[in-house]
Image 1 (cartoon, one colour):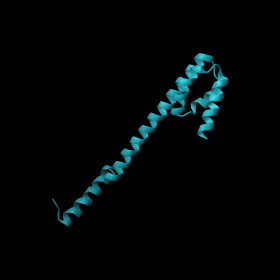
Image 2: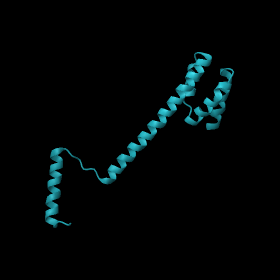
Image 3: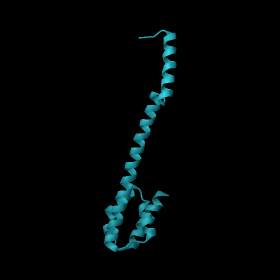
Image 4: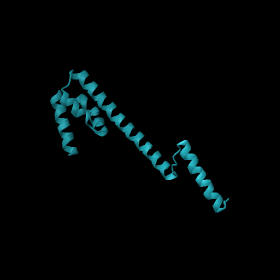
Length: 114
């Protein structure tokens, strides 16, 4: 249904005035889509970061249980590993006899990412 132009203009002016009174900013459908996409991307990034942090914490706990306290620099390197690297490390870490072998593994992992 189409309104006559003068009624449509009057309606738009009244809506604008009402929205200003109520502090209701107008958001276009494109803006809504952009906002929703941003939310989805943020949730995805949050899940990815949480997964990485959880895997890093597990690897650190396992290594501490095996060898006791870890060097702070070594822990820092572990925290920076990607999810894929942490998965590979978790499959291999029980084969390490000492932290020197872990250091070698980390050096090799660094050389593959650079």
